[in-house]
Length: 175
Image (cartoon, rainbow, N blue to C red):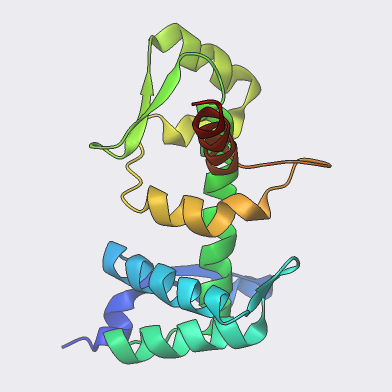
């Protein structure tokens, strides 16, 4: 019978030089991602996330909690790669949602489109968007919370959440 460690490792192998097997892929599930998000929020509150990203101690702490909680071998590199993937998804999805004709369905946890032609036209110039047409992102709120501040777009850049809060304050001040 397979151990928990073996179950979490994807059986695909990458072939390196001389067709030698070089690495296994770690497989994440939603529960693991939620625990990771909770640990990262705790680490952020402890000051283990700076402008340059997550400190090594935060990655190590997350790996330790995940390894213990799920009885699998999670490395800090596994954690780092998951965060990198989340940042990539955040960038792609937030760019899509910033366009006219796209919206977020909070119940289905996916992008909705007004019509197929708008989607196809967008994907023509944004190839990385294509896989997100029907992609369910159950942990989108965690991804936004942990990745939105990482994506500055220039001097004075703000997230959608920052803009919403600023507009709220302006509305309250006028009343």
